[in-house]
Amino acid sequence: DAIVLTNIGTDHQGNFPDGKVGVERVFREMLEGRKPSATVVVCADDPVAAEMARAVGGCTTYGTSLDANYRVENVRYEKHRTVFSLRCPDGTALDDVRVYGIGPHLARDAAAAIACAHLNGVDLATARDGMARFVGVPGRFEAKGVHNGVTVVYDRASTAEAVAASMEAAKILKDQGASRRLVVVCNPLPVDFNPEWDERLEDFVGAIAVAD
Image: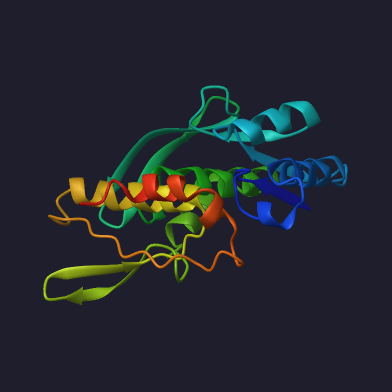
C-alpha cells in the first residue's frame, strides 16, 4: 500500500463541524492507521503536512525544501513541459525529469510519483520515462483551442490553493511570450457545494489578481 500526501489545505472543510481542525485530524488518523508495510510520501513544502509527517514518523518527504528526502531542483520550463532535476536520498541526481504542463506544483507532483515508485522497487530512469509519457488529465489547465488569436484554457480548480497554482502556470506562460494578456473568466461553484468559496472569497480574489 502507498499514501501520497501532497498538501492539507482548505478543501472539504465544510464537511467537518470543526473545519480545518477536522480535516487535519482525518489526515493524521490516516497516517497513523496505515499498514506497517505502507509507503508514505509527504510534501515537505506544505507546512501542515510536513509537521504531521515529523510527528507521525516513518514518512519519506519530497519537494523543493532543503530537508526533503527527494528534492526538486533546477526547475525550468519548455513548451508544454516542466523540467527539473530530482536529488535522491543517496545524493544522486535524476536529471531532465519532464512532466506535461507548466508550474512548480507539477514538478512537486511528479517528484511524489517518482519517489513512491522508487520506494516500491521501480528503477529511477524507468520512473522518469513513464512520467515523460504522462499527458495530463481533463479539466486541469486543459487547452481547449484557439479562436481569433485567443488561447482558451479550462481549469476546474475549486480551492484557493488550486486556483493560485493554475494562475501561476498561466503567468509563467505569459512571461514566456505565449500571450500578451491574461484574462480570467471565473464561474464560482454554489456556496452550498463548496463553502470555501464564501468563507475564503478574499483568497480566491487574491489568487486571480495576477490576471490583467
